[in-house]
Image (cartoon, rainbow, N blue to C red):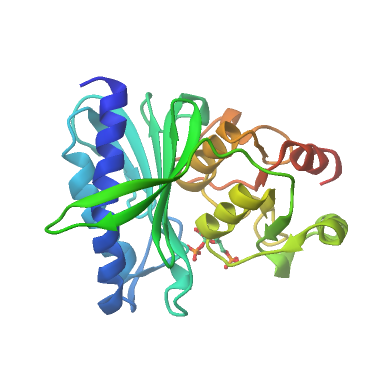
Length: 284
Ligand code: FDP
């Protein structure tokens, strides 16, 4: 199987799992009393989505290893591409029934490796509809999933060759612990753009992708590296944003060029229209 065929298999596996993940949340909304490798409380749904996707992805021929935000170590499963996953992004939105997602990155290098080795990325949004945004032939396409009989799922193309429009919205996380400098930056941005922050990266990013603007989870006074994970969240979304004509930074360098030291390391994240990323690099 060539690399593209493997990427397509991973996409199909995630699409097939997505309706089950959403349906399974109903009875898995309690915390399990355990923490993930980033010391965050795990919900039953996090553990379950992780197991479901792990089973499907590690069985794909052409996938050599899988790294999950919910697993301490890389799982070796054969020869081939490396897949990263955040099985349930934004799971603290589950108790209030707000948007959550799944984020996948595909690399042609062993973990831990930088975003320069990424060859494909996609994310699922569990909203009123289940949609999937993926990179394909250097473009960004959005699919809507329709469940058919049995286990069949058909992804229908909803938006093709998505390009970031003129900036309209912004959403920044971690506001309780922003630096003074970042508060001033936010104050200025809020004069031009409409605030849209829902607390799940995929949901907030999806709005920026469709409406243009800036998503950020910056360095916090109590957490200099911010909250989001480089491998599982920042790199795949940066890859998608850049293919949609946008850009990314940690304030000093392109997220995708950032060297990776540890599997679960965090990074400040800024993603969106190029002119706004330049503004971040000059002012934050
Ligand atoms: P969550 O903790 O609910 O999983 O992955 C981390 C994440 O959500 C992102 O999806 C989201 O952007 C961010 O954390 C939200 O953090 P705040 O609660 O600090 O806003």
